[in-house]
Length: 371
Image (tube, rainbow, N blue to C red):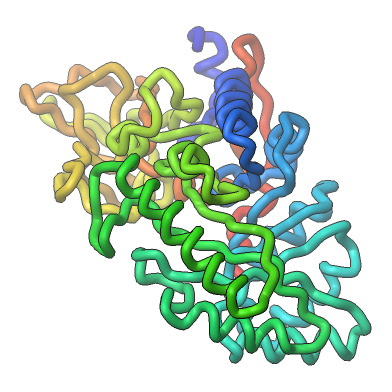
């Protein structure tokens, strides 16, 4: 970015390169198309209808959300096919998804227990509608999802409930193999495809004619699609990529479409410089310098292996130099690559969009939609 544009930035801020984002969208869509697998990207990364529409225009079948609030924002932005891949627990959520279902061409809800399915069934009956649901199964992440050996029995029970239509299964597995973390995305994906196919077959054998088998996050998405054993993948981070994905072998540095810019506001000593962004800018959910990837800080200074962001307060980021002299001065603008882009964007009310020539601001419309 040239200096004239750089000095238009109000820091700390996030800048998204829309050209690279569009390339990333096209690459993922082409890979899924080549495998004959549907793409339903997760909007957790960008949280903006603008980018959801770009993904849909490129060929995505619909989008995935985690929370009702995110789905409502996407619906307001014109998205008509949404999967909420999260347990709908609580009367407030059920009320909102019933209202949402009446607005959309297609709404799919995730369930992993009768405690979730029964209230949805009752609410759908009262509203006079049928809700489409997918059964979440655990394939090793040990998060939400019914245990594999109980999936068929639960599918039968859910399928018997009135006003619910069980159409498929889904999972989040990520980099797990034999129920333990792995660094091998190909190995993890192969197991993911095999497990999901086996679970689907057991459910069909029990008399429930499911059609959808949904899996795959960004690290494993393309590899799971290649197995030919799933019908849909749900990557999210691929649209912008981040430093984490470079470590996981799912992206290269030149495919990262996001940067954080911060200004040096103080240089009390040559050994360190203080940025105008701290934990409220560079939030990350992994501790630096811990296995397996040993991230070098809370963000990576672009093109500079000497500077490290290893200490932060709410509004202060402390850059230190391995050599003992940062070379930075008050007023300098520093370009950084986020470790985890999803949490980074969710910290911002607005981001800058950069098309190679101009900058403009875009509201992060689903920011903070935690319900």
